[in-house]
Length: 421
Picture (tube, rainbow, N blue to C red):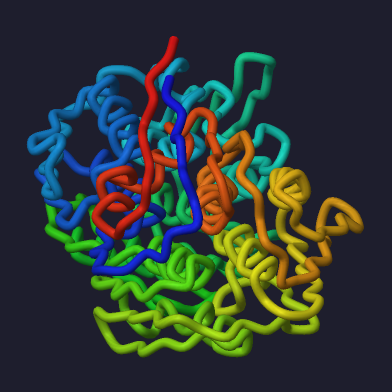
């Protein structure tokens, strides 16, 4: 285990390049199990969650070349077990994606309860609904779920009760190996869902409606190998933009597409952020920040929940009151209560709404990183604060942000990673 000691109050400046989208890397790696041919994924982020997914693929019989680099070549000639390693599953929420791949490839899947995040925040009911529609039977128990389709999956027409990202991806993975066409309505439209569709299309699946809420798949008899380069991680890019803003710095963020960042930068612009945005470049300058009356998360292309924690920290450094309403998830805002002990003026209305009053000077303290995004938000708060802070179990944040200490140091931050038992 390790903590991150941060001596805040420094203005950060410089250049940061983001890697490929973490939320695309995991489903695309899961898709490699659908074929016995080699798939190559490029611009892969070198983060802890990808490392766990690699080990999960290997536990199922895949060989993975290039581990620790940005180019991975995955070959799975045969699946050796229907059950991914439960210990690894317990470390990665994205392991739920293996249900679709295993069912599609072998007709059987057994999965322990996925971990790696707040246990109560997300269910897999949408995933099970989609897989049942394709002909799988589901048996649930304390040890997880067992799914079986001994006669193979059959294409179906389905309406997802929730536009879940991983639920949509699970449906896509399974439908890619089903017999006959499948139509998925009320599908998630996020860029990483579109990237999975693009990879499946390269593997031979005919897909209509990529990027929309209605996806129609016509799978071939067999899937081939494919090569795909991941788009830059727009959530990471926006995170570095917020770090620049709260420290009064200027940071040039490279590697993300403007169209992916636009739903976030539109809100940041309303808060007075001074920036330039073009494909591959997001440059933030010192800004006179002010509150917005209300900020609400929404389904894509609305404001994404993944950045709401960081924007809450931004609100502490903006003049006026902002109501943040994250109706998608109920526990993310709870992690930000710690900001009150840093002298932030917060009022948690309920699990979904928080009112921030700024501008408030923050004071350093010990902080507990509880998930990737709220953890990075607390890092940003510590960087803006006077005095020393200690962010506990920084590995949580490193699941989504590669080389965090090195990149912060390069931007001028005074940080130290402290190992402990």
